[in-house]
Image 1 (spheres, rainbow, N blue to C red):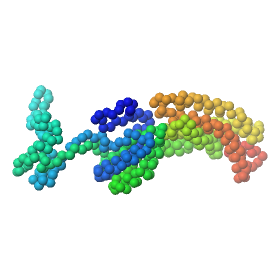
Image 2: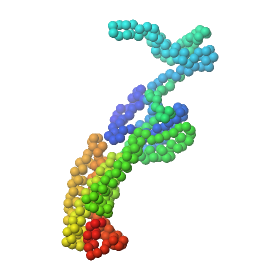
Image 3: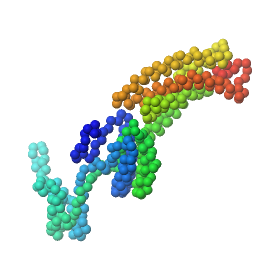
Length: 398
């Protein structure tokens, strides 16, 4: 689409945006300072540095979108004549915008009447330079004597943070060629320190999508810890054991490993949405190991066989249910993983995390849980806690 449009005359900024995830630009660096010229120079150097990264495009700053405007200043000659900056600006405004001379009532509406220069005398900058300015006590003098007018690009909005002027340098990233996190990290660690050292008084911080991801990551970390504690409590109460919930939850890291491998296999990057899927995965992968542990405990409680045989038979008898449960879960999430529409991209990372995490954790569960039973018994023997003629019951209480 960008190539088909070509160059558009008079367009200052053209941005294509179709994000289905977090709002804001993938690269958004906020510069703050009290000196506007230093901010402009630092922003220009930062934009130049961003252009060196492959896959980074639509580089812009918050200064770019302003319209053209005239900067009118009082000259030393005008100041010597006793003319003020406000008086000069007022006369220029009255000449080009108009001075209100009266208001006429027409029915229920009030019409304001202005007097100003004719249209042909307001069309060019030369008209301003050739106008005459009233100087109190001195008569009329040419504008060029008492003032100067320079054309410049203004700003569409003035942003401040902590009483400092703020400018944002933003850019979009082609995520198939480079990761936004890599660009942000290199800019913060390598590029910005060099730029800020040349402009004292200018500070920087991440903004936009990166800032939102950092805030979300902090809240997700607290949520993940709370969820793990709740899962442990939910398992420890019915099992009446402190050790078996840890045995059941030992498959969670392998589920997260499988989720990361799934993103690598499908060529997707790990994002905040992927992390949300991994947190949900923590509550799903424990189901398979819980089914296996509960069946082994049941066989041990019946006391019909040695604990080694109970572990082996439990793994054999629950192999098919555990495997089929995971396969059906994976197949149910497969259509979302293969969907290419924009709407599906929002939930696709979560589907990949859950599907591949469940599949990988299941393969580990069928081997890990029986092995941990053996390890647990060996530890109890080493610590001298396995006593009496019934080690099977002692193992069931682990």
